[in-house]
Length: 335
Image (cartoon, rainbow, N blue to C red; front, side, top):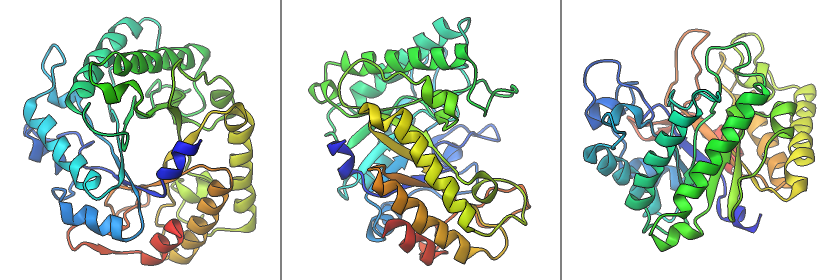
């Protein structure tokens, strides 16, 4: 719990290193820019840090940058390291994960294959990044779930939840087995099924055996306002505050009260028309409530500022101009 105090408020480099190439260009630049964000720069992270964000989450998709034996391409490791260093050199806490991977589909049948791959990936990453201090946090997986099934986003089933726990333990054991001394006590971040706040997913969570382990949750709440597609649900009302209160009461009941520390690695409220004031009020209330429970929050910034009603618009920093498009929301979130 004390460890979380160094996290502070965080910012996600969304839709960037986690992008999946839409064309044949799988070069580091091709992947990083395939979802229409520019190449990440040190100046970009300096802007984020100056705004008051002290944690930098780096979502990374590795599956397009490995060979048949799951050996990661050296060029991709170098580029990810460059981006990690942008935040790390500024004194920020940096979180690096596995993002948009489909090979860890959590069934018992798939577990042997997924176990082998997660061990192979994290063995390489533990070695490559092992000399970094505890300000670099490893996160086992992003929202591991049974994709494209009826239970994908509703807490999963007993099998799925159980397999996610086993993969988390594989991750912890692999990092701890590294020959790099810092990995013996490095803080590690693990999700439950889909990083979900559904009651059943919280209740079934089992922390892997080991020390310095933190639970990762994603919570875009209240859902209809923060993430839902309906453009008319764009106001932050008193009943929405109650939903947020209930969210943290639930997290406290199932997780925090058991001595398990939590970070909300993704959250935010999407733009729907001209609702900046409502989103600002949401940001202020959400983070204030989270701090009451000692839970750091990391905004999901995907660099998107316009689109149709199904477009998830969460951009705060215009990465092309290095200007904050919604400074009121930023100030409310970090203050």
